[in-house]
Image (cartoon, rainbow, N blue to C red; front, top):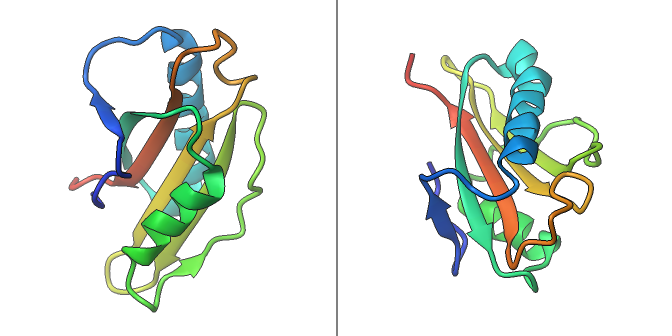
Length: 121
């Protein structure tokens, strides 16, 4: 798991907007699992003024140079998606999903970021 975005809060408890977050997590798993296998997802709260491009750039800087962007559509019904991977004996990847107003219409005082990585299984 990469270092969290500065100012991010890791959520372990149930959240407001829980059903939308769960739906986005299930959708993210369905989108990625067929190509990437099993994934683990962490949920983070981010300040409302955090820009999506800043988030993507921050995580991209943590990846080795041989990682490439995957060709998943960046816009989904409930979130914006960025995925990178590197081929090797073991498939390595990182996926980010930032819920949009459709994904979490409750107008929370923070944004929700989902960070997906391979499980250890």
